[in-house]
Length: 444
Ligand SMILES: C[S@@+](CC[C@H](N)C(=O)[O-])C[C@H]1O[C@@H](n2cnc3c(N)ncnc32)[C@H](O)[C@@H]1O
Ligand code: SF4
Image (cartoon, rainbow, N blue to C red; front, side):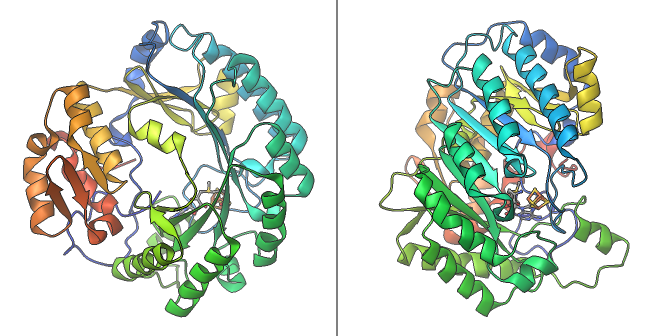
């Protein structure tokens, strides 16, 4: 998710929030992944992987109560309990299939991320069933973190108890905004009283970590409301607060309206969203939080880790499960079929539900890790020298010179560190780390 992508690598770029902005979550860009690389992947599945590479699981739950107008994820709002069960049955078969591949067999996951869509939309019975299936094939004894995304209005006390009981350690709640008018204008299904109803239950259940998501730049946002939002976020006292600047990728309802010339909404420009985000960072630092990445603030006095993010940004393997999921195994990126129907049909036919793949080179992997880790605001030279035998200050010399000259970054000895203004627009700086052949292309 987040800040603008390929089109705006310079601070002087147009400040309007244009349709087509993206949140950079991977490299090389998805538009270079293709069906032609799927045989490479199938081949890769058959070979054992270096034993010391950490592995995690990502499960996509593509159901929501309502489609938010800004949302760019693959979600369905029309599936009943029977259809959800059919999807989870297919996921169970995928788990059985994948766990038997020589590249996966015997490896124990270090982290699990259940994302969406809205994982908390499914019933406690469905939830227990899918976790049983996971644990039957992927023993949890080395799992350090299980993240589960929730939408406030879908939670009951009983469901939260089930979420806790199956082993979730990190619960992430999509608050987005505390103002009911803004929530409803942007198509959210929940209202603010639901946030306040569920938070005490969440606290009572004793999850190791509770995160809330906020979006800077929802339609209707103002300075006064944003400041009030940050105060309310501090009051509810989460362990971490993730702030996304509103993006308008092509597949959102907002973007479709804008492209058809039908949308009357006013979208805050990038400078305003950055100013809101900047304010939030300063206020949260005052209130006892530290910057953990360009998006996430974590409580200073609590040792908050985010194993999924850190492992992924340092090159861990990630087994994608469910429709539209992305992952990475033994140097090959891949994605499952985006549509639920194609995904379930492939599983029922006894096939791998794969849509596209990309076999990375060592250069791709080096660049990917460097640009993803830069999202944390700092890059250490030493680990890249150890892993890839290069000095990243030399590999990225031209781009780093530009970043330093425009006051987006400093290079201090063995550390490359973003300034606050660099951190606030980190996604727009990342295409500068791309290899020439991937620049200026579509992202997805
Ligand atoms: C999968 S959702 C989280 C769980 C649940 N579906 C919910 O929305 O409450 C992931 C997060 O992505 C963020 N998000 C979605 N669309 C976005 C956009 N266009 N720009 C910025 N952030 C966005 C929201 O903060 C949302 O909480
Ligand atoms: S609830 Fe979450 S996943 Fe569902 S449409 Fe809204 S932002 Fe997207």
